Length: 226
Image 1 (cartoon, rainbow, N blue to C red):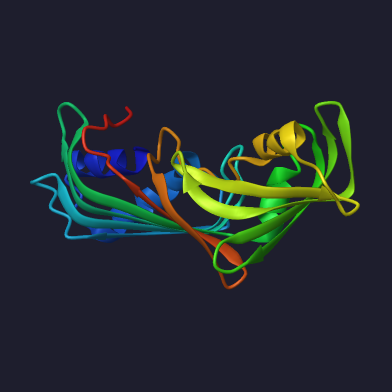
Image 2 (cartoon, helix red, strand yellow):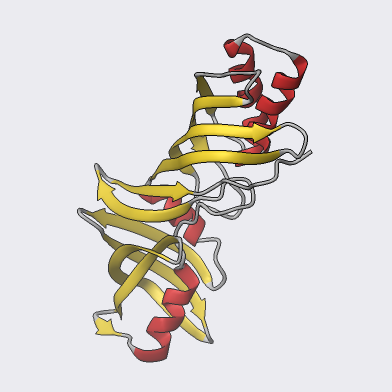
């Protein structure tokens, strides 16, 4: 991860000011995680001579990752970090966790960019329900305005998916292959996995009008980029 590569570089230079380390991490986050309105970072228990840190905490507001819905709020915490300066490999990451908050308007904007969907609107209901209204053309069938997809948000295959329960248009249920095709177009609705942030979604819920995603990661053995 580029974030931890910065720690490595600063350790090699002998920098002993935690504020400097945190500032360098923040400066790298737009390339590592995507542009954002604001980033912040906190490093606790940094031991430069031992190449370790007890905890690295990263927060981001309005993170715009490529080919993904905007994340309204992202919190990432790494505990028990150690790295090898010579090989540039993470020799220990005790745990890595993240919480992402996604707004229905941002999910709708993202879904509207998927193949066959020209417009989308998302409505959420606790604890894990979502209704997606779409229009567009899928497998040669033009979806009328107000085609409605109902389902349950679930953590599956390391990402957030909508387990489609029904697809209706003009009050008529659309089942079979068309319902499956619609599901294929909108899934996954959110995915935190990429080469810089190897996180797997473990839980998803609807809370205070937003989708809250919990994720964990095992980063031990990851080779840091040069």
